[in-house]
Length: 227
Image 1 (cartoon, one colour):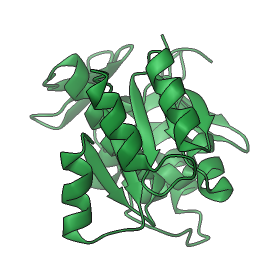
Image 2 (cartoon, one colour):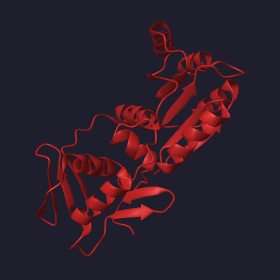
Image 3 (cartoon, rainbow, N blue to C red):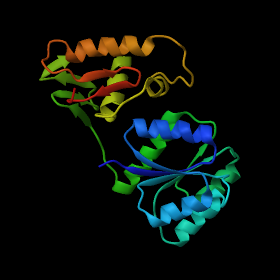
Image 4 (tube, rainbow, N blue to C red):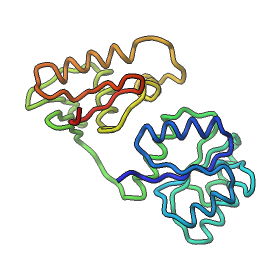
């Protein structure tokens, strides 16, 4: 079942950026541009997490969060704000926020923080192994195999595969890979992603009947048993 996220953000460009990223990852997202509407949405329907801008019209983000906590609504909340001073972050957390992300930010960081909030809600889970069909990665020994056959990956290829496995069955965009695997906060306009995807595909798919690494032209990549 898709996770439901409430986004409360009045800046159209920022909202579009976040909405695009969340929906690419498979989340179901409801967007409100006004704090009062955000409060009514959050209190009238169940969400898995809320992404809340601090400075929004109608009812500011701090007031919305305080009102939600006063109403005993425990939904995890990630604050977004251009206010980066330590006191501002502390104020947001003390108001009832669970995490605080300062603008400008990379989408990969927002995604990671959101995943962390969702994990906290469902309880801790320690993963030592990732798999997609007969492709298995041991995170402790860093060994990779498919159908029992060992695969020799370079460090960057291992990091790329680990990220794809952690997002199994979901579309991963080029921007997400550049930020998460290469730590780029901008597009260097190189073929580095395509080149590494091609090399990784040869290692994990060549010689096997069922391909696992799929390219979605104009969108990104997906590691999945489904074509």
